[in-house]
Image (cartoon, rainbow, N blue to C red; front, side):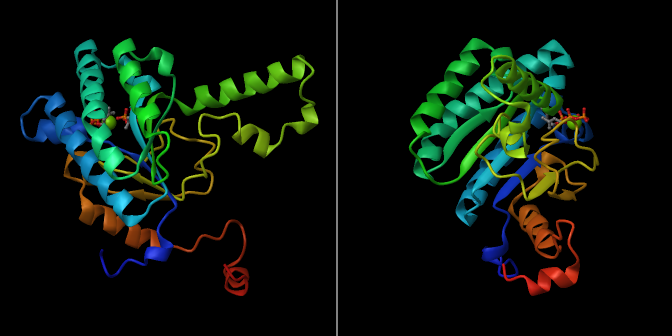
Length: 248
Ligand code: IPE
Ligand code: IPE
Ligand code: MG
């Protein structure tokens, strides 16, 4: 482990917007899909490293609800890669005690991809190490609207009083029910935006942006992000003095 990292102060939940595969490939005169293939290798490395470091929850934005708008050939290639990744990683997830999870509109995904996802979710269900969540066909606004609709349905059916809709009820209706909010969000490739990812859940996350494209992101870049995170003071609206006085 990197000795300048405090193992007690690592994020409990790390969320990542894995961006820059296409640009990585373009810079090398390669096809975009080659960038995605290389990106999958980074996923393997980062999943393994996070699990080794004892990160409780790792959530990776792998395919957004908006990514369906990309050229058909790219979408098809991404779906094939996804299926291949899940299939080939199940054994390693078992070895590392990782539980697999997916958030997003699974109904939009091809049937064969969904079958692979379900098989891995089932197989890893009893693991109690890191929870690895892939966000697939995921859009945060869609998630929030669906939650509102579900709660409204409960109210209309007389099973819930409007006053019972509080932050907890809302949080429990999202795809991420039961998962603590991310402490740290990393986005690679120099883009500084959220792109419809975990809008509700990121309310108090620390944000970390790096110019490095996802295929070039590695353990050292991860350690760098964690070091930066450890240097921050998370005040949650309070003052610095209050935090010193409050034993954590
Ligand atoms: C991220 O890389 C992967 C996905 C969104 C699926 P991009 O494909 O967005 O790469 P850039 O942003 O075009 O470089
Ligand atoms: C966000 O990346 C989605 C994923 C990383 C899966 P995009 O590359 O799609 O984001 P925008 O469209 O540039 O904001
Ligand atoms: Mg991108």
